[in-house]
Image (cartoon, rainbow, N blue to C red):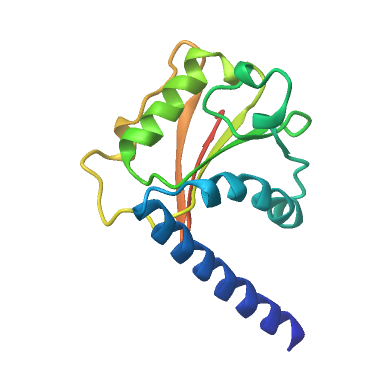
Length: 154
């Protein structure tokens, strides 16, 4: 019974969080988006065991375009964004491949803070691929009140 209560509370809080982000971004405020990067660290650690660090605060943060959080040991990196459109996803993938992030991270997760779009003008099959590196779209998308697109090496 306690586990069910905890799950329901998490769902409630995440839904509220998504609503707050949507309201704030519609008014041009992005402070909450930046805070979300740090807020997600313990949540993702609890869920997946990742030891993520907010690399936007690292001394050499200009070395990580397109990435906000990273766990070098697990080889996972995360882009946190409130922009749910395909243009943002493509831009993130282009930055990721342009700066050879795939050599350090075998998995890129684009964590979209807001609700996903109802539809996209292009399919996931048309997302950028890195043929020269073998880094490909895993074609796995999981969505609820938030949306994560995951990319992994085959």
